[in-house]
Amino acid sequence: DDDHEEGEEYLFKIVIIGDSAVGKSNLLSRYARNEFNLHSKATIGVEFQTQSIDIDGKEVKAQIWDTAGQERFRAVTSAYYRGAVGALIVYDISRRTTFDSVGRWLDELNTHSDTTVAKMLVGNKLDLENIRDVSVEEGKSLAEAEGLFFLETSALDSTNVKKAFEMVVRDIYNNVS
Ligand code: GDP
Ligand code: MG
Image: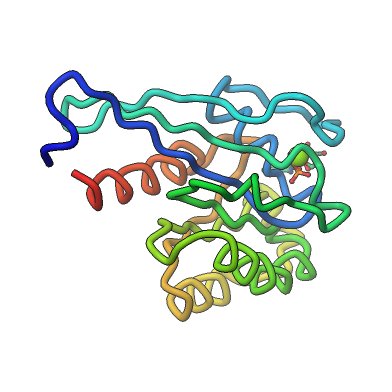
């Protein structure tokens, strides 16, 4: 639209939420730096990573925020959500409790942001298929019921990681351009 003449930039804030140890930090490091850490501790320091994506010849920047471990203390602040236009809500397919928490994370997201936020439900650790604890169907039907996109990913082997972030970015872009 008129707010975005040629040469102007698109910058979208995207937040990653979900229980501790579901792989949020590794999804981001896999996407932004193609790195994976088997022994990652709660990341302290880096607040967000900015990634440039080409959509229809336009440069779109995704500023992707990671929680830096506050989720362990249920203290993800409103500042974290402020201005977000996209969100990845992550659970671990091998740990049902993390799937059971998705509703709580959605409530928190909805409290702190407006309804037009593009949301992707992410079932991470797809490489742990042999100890799967949440079926694909359960993930799918929750996503359908809540109006979310849905993908299963593996930050370890990279499956669907780029796709998960870029589907969100593309949806945001489609809604503003
Ligand atoms: P966060 O607390 O949600 O940020 O989770 P982390 O990214 O710190 O990951 C927690 C643990 O899960 C670490 O030991 C990671 O190596 C591991 N992990 C993260 N993603 C995957 C994945 O896709 N597959 C497997 N097998 N392990 C993962
Ligand atoms: Mg983390």
